[in-house]
Amino acid sequence: MGKKELQCRQNLKTMMIMREFERVIKDLANEGFVDGAVHCYTGEEACALGVCLNLNDDDYVFSTHRGHGHAIAKGLDLKKIFAELMGKASGVSNGYGGSMHLFNPKLGFMGGNGIVGGGVPVSIGTAYASKYLNDGKVTVCFFSEGASNEGWCHEAMNMASLWKLPIIFACENNLFAATTPSYKTLANPDIYERAKAYDMVGVKCDGNDLDDCIKTVKKAVDRARKGEGPTLIEFKTYRVEGHCRVIRDLEIFRPKDVVQWWADHDPIKVYSERLIEKGIITEDELKVIAAEVDSEINEAIQFGKDAPLPDKEEFLKKISERYAI
Ligand SMILES: Cc1ncc(C[n+]2csc(CCOP(=O)(O)OP(=O)(O)O)c2C)c(N)n1
Image (cartoon, rainbow, N blue to C red; front, side):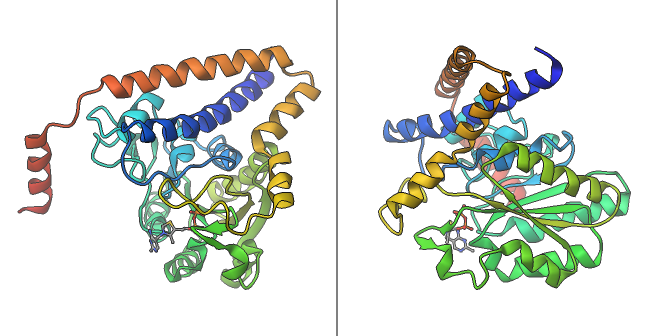
């Protein structure tokens, strides 16, 4: 296998790891190993990977409440992500954060956010710093179509465009915000068209097609690195799962033919079929990849289960130091 083919195989495997992560996390929650709200990224894998494949380790990514896939794509340690969701000291946020607060600033992963759209105004901070320091880094801020209607998203995009900041606003339009379908909240279903109002480049891409995501993001990253300013990319995708573990909204506004259309356009299905068609992998190789994914996931789960809980005294000390109480 040549370098390019190996990269394709790895891309498929990474998306399969993201998918399997979400599948097992539900079991772990039901078994009592994971607590709190967990928002699954199932079906949106190509967006995160398409973005992160274009980034360097020290480029910045701001995530959302639905951020497991973003963290995996940015290269955070799978074992430590599982440990974090299990509230363990070996977790990426020392077990203090949980599902919505995965962090690793050393890898440019600036964290998830429980406040919908909350990462958007914050993200122009690192983009401004990069411009000020002329360090060549790019910031990507993920958010979804529900968040796109928050006032501070507009303020941030306007400012980013005015200051020509090296940032990409990555809107994963998965057509639902909790129980509300997007046709009830978006005056114009094409969010990327809003870019015009900020005098910014706005583009859409097929968020379920990894190759389209890679190609679209590459152009935006190149523009940002050349100092040509921000881009708003709208990834057209679909939230396959319910909003989160505690809100069961799948029965609402889900016509069967629409669900079927998106299932036929599942990002892993689309990409694996393409690789098979091009002769890059075979059906047998696909089974080998699935077995590798299984084994890596099981090893990471075990790591999380075996990891220690945070020390209570140390936790209280850190909190009191930080907030001086
Ligand atoms: C400021 C704010 N408003 C409301 C909520 C409650 N809430 C959590 S997730 C969510 C839906 C967000 O929808 P969207 O931005 O489309 O992201 P998705 O869940 O579809 O990925 C809402 C309303 C919140 N956490 N923060």
